[in-house]
Length: 337
Ligand SMILES: [Zn+2]
Ligand SMILES: [Zn+2]
Image 1 (tube, rainbow, N blue to C red):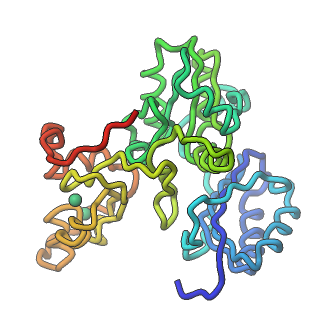
Image 2: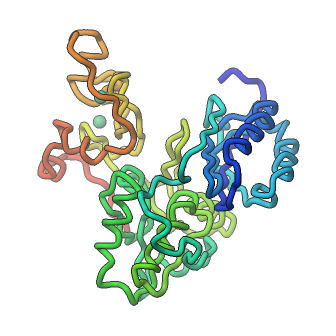
């Protein structure tokens, strides 16, 4: 926070076979650590997926390091639209079996037979047209705060679940033009290949994801068809795309799209909380967590929860236990066109 220089928040990914992911990981770690880069990066035999914050004065040197590796040469980089540079506070590079935990057996279908890539502007023109179906391939906690107009947003907690629910919901739409999107495009690489294998004929995906879409419509000075906030996986937890708020505080129901992690370290669940509720509940998700945070209970710690389980969690939150409760709330979300 006290750094006297600026940072750039960027992201990139590529499916590209790596013979020795561990060796590659160690090498880029040395390069990027030396340049004081921060970020969360996954490396797998199938490629790389990176979200990073790079010191502005080292940016050219950082770009030079990309040229050293076959996989990173000419890789398309996406730049954050709302960027204060405070996106990451350390450099983490992990080797994983897969880039995105999809739970799929890649041997069962052709992962290279992906959907057609659409630019942000092409995607923009298709959204809302006859015979098209827009599908949000992200988790519910992401689409809850922002999504494309008229998109199908499955109530999924994981990408694997997302694929299952989306395939079910689309069963009678195999002949329609399917328009898939996600945050930066990587999930749609898998999802589009999967849907094509399931018999969908016209599968398209937003190249570069909402991140790239937001940049392109801004440049072209168009009204966004993505309403609300684009959830991002760094300390910022979101970039506003359309300036509208489409979600509610999980505790009082007031329009709000600020995600926060429960202040009880043993819980740390991700949820939406307005500033008033944050003050009232001391940043906690439930009275139980608030008590525990203040050391009033000596009982066993609740199991550490992460991003993935917000739907189940939502159902357990006392104030939104029933949908009825939300309907009766005095707060109204403005109607969208
Ligand atoms: Zn609230
Ligand atoms: Zn909690």
